[in-house]
Length: 258
Image 1 (tube, rainbow, N blue to C red):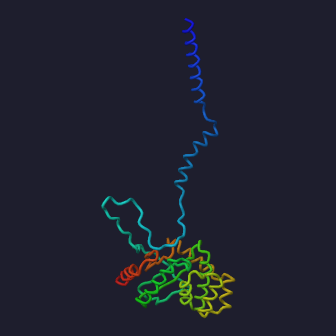
Image 2 (tube, rainbow, N blue to C red):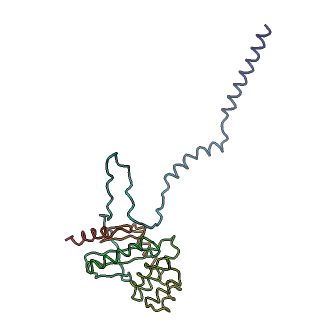
């Protein structure tokens, strides 16, 4: 009998402990902790919805198309190297250009003297000049990328070379040696090109061409050309250092239009 009473007392004590444990575990969180936890999903939604800004970049060639992977055995459709969309690209009298204004094809290039892909594309531009002559008008616009520490000053130097009537010779010298773009290198290139050195130094010291360079860069952004090099062939975007065959196909299409 005594044993039964002891067992019943132990069982009762255990039951009371269990009930008390449940009450403690179900005690509500402090208001601060609860509200912090409720806010976390909202933060996740906000982070997911926040827009991402596309950074300026160098472009070797057009990026691959985005979207779902093709089915097994199916080939992914190729993205066109030249856009079918035509944009209005304003050209100003102070923009360096070669070729007649009456040419059927106008190519506007946004470029950066420190970008290696722009250096590669400059050779292609030279081939276009040789092969098409007066059928094509080439216009150069400045687009120094912010992470290229010497590109902005090189762009201003090239703008001064254009003001003195010898842009293309200076352009070719800078692209021929893209590792030499410090102030002293720019002055050496200017002297070798035959520029007026007093005017050249004064232009770099005063930043007289800075507004024009910024205007070109802003125009590139408004046209969706965040990378360099970017070409607009009669308003159609060709992005990156594409091979000459890609340019020729686009140019020939434009020449064949009525």
